[in-house]
Amino acid sequence: MNSRLIAHVDMDAFYASVEQHDHPELQGQPVIVGGTSRRGVVCAASYEARAFGVRSAMPMYEARHRCPDAVYLPVRMPRYQQASAQIFSCFAEFTPQIEGLSLDEAFLDLSDVPGCGDPPALGRRIKQSIRARTGLAASVGLGPNKLVAKIASEKSKPDGLLHVPIENVQTLLDPLPVTALWGIGPRTGVHLEKNGIRTVAELRHAPPPLLQALFGNQARFFQQLACGEDARTVGADAQERSVSQETTFERDLADFESLAGELRSLTEGLCAILRHQQLRPHTLVLKLRTTDFKRHTRQRHFAPPDASFAVLWPLARQLLSEWLAQHPRTLLRLIGVGARDFAAADQLGLFEESLQRAQRLDAAADAVHARYGETALSRGLRSRPE
Ligand SMILES: [Mg+2]
Image 1 (tube, rainbow, N blue to C red):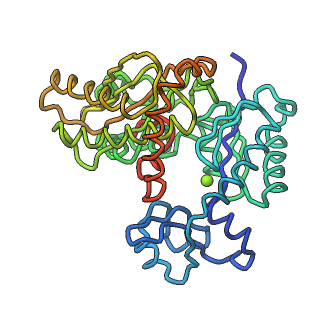
Image 2: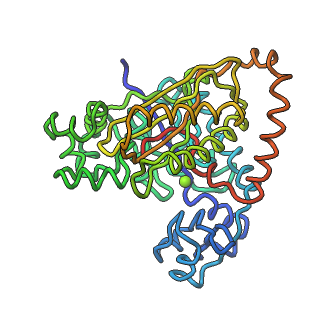
């Protein structure tokens, strides 16, 4: 396979930067955008606010404690969506192969585009295009795959550009903590450290039996990541895609009631995303991870394709109770629910009638979520272990 050129583009402190752009008097000042209620969290902090230790997802009261003099602003989602649309229209001028990760972040496959022979120049053009259209700064990471591109963009922030050619990949990765790798979160990081694996180099050199014990059937995948190999494609089309929601627990769980409660809210979030993206799956997938890191999946196919909670929730619940019956008293650290095998768009008309009623009910639920906060939707659009 020819070497690919993948970009990861990520706007710097997106919401806060939009506010600073729209209110020039705020430039150079700590700006914090977030929920204004007592239980609100920080959605974005300008770099000036980060200097005080304020971070995204931090409770608002903690941010106010650390940085009382910051300018606190509510979330203006329609404005950020508008800026996001402009940013994505810039991407589309470079390549049709775009995989959006959030409003302000995407992978682009630039392997076949004009100018790909000079990656830094191409990266500069992407940054300039975004700056010209939105007035905002983006960081661009370029590399032979998604893993490297994402790490490169993070390293380059703010307003950065970093190209990592394939011969430099190992030098970049080796000294990083294992949590820099896709799919290794803080919890797994602690677990690995207890086993003497702190850096990517240490993971790369770990004996296979140890990795087998730590990761089960994922061992090879993680060792390949540590070697800088990542074959994931950018923006696979809807037929191959899957959409999922998952959560890792604060403490391991084994009882049906708690697990079903988590699964129910994940399923609600999943249905909302499917409706938003107008996707109707034929397959529902239940994903579990036990405390020994083994992954278990159960799936059910159904017809006609459906994205309503009324159809998906009973299936998810049933898959969970079947699995628990087969694995009594097993502690779980993660639960997830996903959908795939989406109906082609032209198949949809056939089922329109019967779907409409269920959809009206779900749309009403979406409206309630939109009004009263939607933790389920903030969990991310794509499947990511951890
Ligand atoms: Mg960002």
